Length: 176
Image (cartoon, rainbow, N blue to C red; front, side):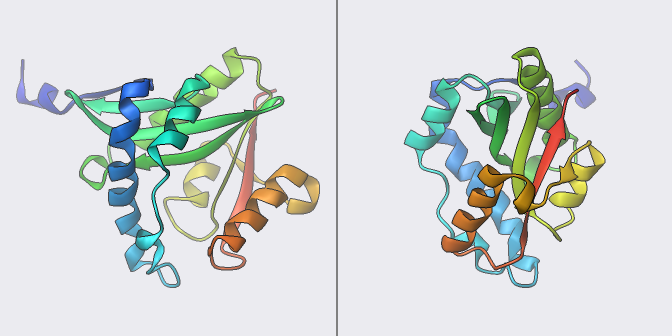
């Protein structure tokens, strides 16, 4: 095996045993926001609880990225009717810049499409380079809260939990 192969990674469906490893990845990825104006305190927000992560994983549409035996990234999602909502996508800073986040999203799109969902939805920061602009590059479009009641509710909930007003945007990626 050459040295180039020692850093390979792959994605797979998340398993219940992965849940305890995910909050540390979320916290590590959150440190990247400390340098963004207006988001300095984001790293202090609590990570998703292991019980919540386990519940998303049990629904069957969550993925992890593994490098050797170590989970280095994850995507957890939740179905809402014909849409699959991406709750959280994180890649550990040590593993960023390798296409892992894009692979997790593309894998989720394939799974969602194969499972009969019409679209993926998510909420994210409008002006953080690795958030909304990244999602737009892989086919997500902004959706006005007035056009999607559930996503409007997600944005309201996020502001109530301390996200800076107007900093978040709802996005959708249709499959048809």
